[in-house]
Image (cartoon, rainbow, N blue to C red):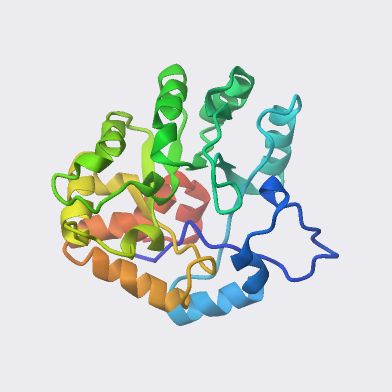
Length: 261
């Protein structure tokens, strides 16, 4: 099984050719400190042992704009395969409330019809809004970035992350595991095998995909992959195959064609 990374970043240092337009009007510190070209990412992938032969793009647009559906279709014609929406983030520290705004409904509906997954950058506070969308549009595919940063310090049975586990009932809800989840500052009473083990029991490994968050997360791509592999070393091989490759191929079918098992 090929390793497929569903969360790397390419940040060109050529801001004349690719003018900056950061969310919230402020560029994140990591992207200014660690710009990464396509060629640099290819080299990192080679060193990590991932397959660099094919890429697909995930894009962000203003989903509240009147022409959001038109813009959504435009980027699909440019070869992109999914969207990523930011309701919070490093330069957007607060949790926005526009997620369930009725103006977004047409976009959710067309995404569901075209089977285009939406990655969501959000905190657990936004889970009620996300449930509104999935209840209204049950065929839309959601990929929850960083497990919505669910807390794990309390340890089993992870009562503090209870809201995350309520999402298991939505069979088109996927989880993206990144270094933010693999290497928290302190696991407290938690541990990778008990937390991720419960996540696999609740959601199934086929609904978990790995993303490096490179170069946002510090370290080489090889180091980041090694840490993730170690965190899931408790899991059976077939489950690891889903987390590190097969889930990505299910979410983005173009990758299944370019990375055969």
